[in-house]
Length: 357
Ligand SMILES: NC(=O)c1ccc[n+]([C@@H]2O[C@H](COP(=O)([O-])OP(=O)(O)OC[C@H]3O[C@@H](n4cnc5c(N)ncnc54)[C@H](OP(=O)(O)O)[C@@H]3O)[C@@H](O)[C@H]2O)c1
Image (cartoon, rainbow, N blue to C red; front, side, top):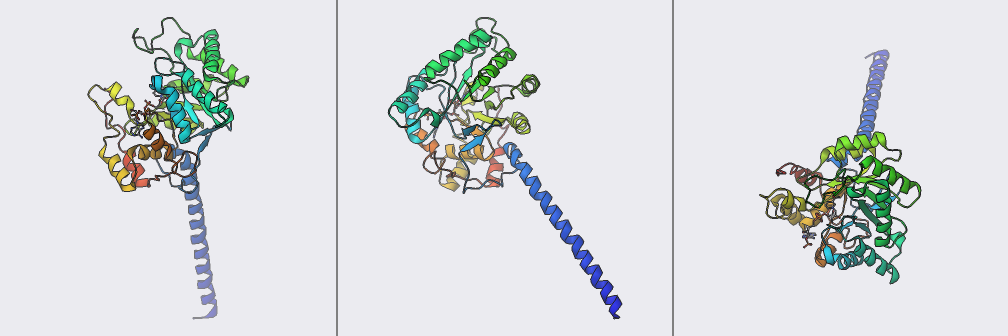
């Protein structure tokens, strides 16, 4: 082969490798970029590969930079046990507490009293806690809302609330149930204005809504001067509320799931007599594979999808088991059950398997 031909072939080879390597670099770059973008969509179950067990993190950061514990303690339905359970939850390591003004379901004053006693005993300071309450739609008129908020502060023995939510977009009109409003109570637009005012005054550190549909969230987005920081909705393996979570992900709003252990099903569907989460074979299999319990698997699944969770329990052992999701204590950074993408997919596939009525 003449030297010139050899040189040409060598050049072509170098060129070819150059093109190939740039292609690989660009594609890899894109792949990495896509995965990073999907970090957000992890919340709707696409991929969770960026999370790792080493430093999972205890907090979500809201869009105003406020930090909120990913794992909180729900206090609905605990009745007279609320005080005891909140103290047991604090002892187990919980620092984020979910309450509401609706005394049909919640004992806000018992939450406040438990917290206050812990503070008096020196276990913690108010600043260590993240306390959430919700405004019932019967208090949506501005003056009523501001009065109800003052009552919440008294109940919670605090000068501020970390997060306040509109509990529902409105009352339901059956005239008897706990969501019934005895009088025309005002619209959620008026209530939102009042929340924005409290936020501007620093009396609440974040504001949001609960049980809002996506079209209502769109309306809220257009209407609000301060954008919602949190949306709290029903979320469990059979009810994954994907549309709302996608909305939250697209608007940088944190999604919190309630009734993650499936408690809603027994209220909503009369054919479902016992909790479908604790009896599910897929969840049981995954729990067994990790040597853990179903509650921990479900909570890990939710957190790995980017959802905040607020499990409730009246049983001290259960409270401790839920807290132990973070290696023995809710204050450690690592998840004690870290699910593979396949396992997350298996649980995500349970969505829609039960009928709401
Ligand atoms: N915004 C809203 O409209 C709304 C609506 C509903 C709920 N929430 C909030 O979300 C919180 C949680 O929802 P939820 O109370 O409906 O239900 P949940 O937390 O999903 O489940 C509570 C049920 O799970 C059981 N449980 C808890 N931990 C367990 C464990 N480790 N092992 C076995 N069983 C366990 C409890 O029984 P034991 O007591 O025997 O442990 C109880 O029956 C509420 O407390 C409330 O703060 C908000």
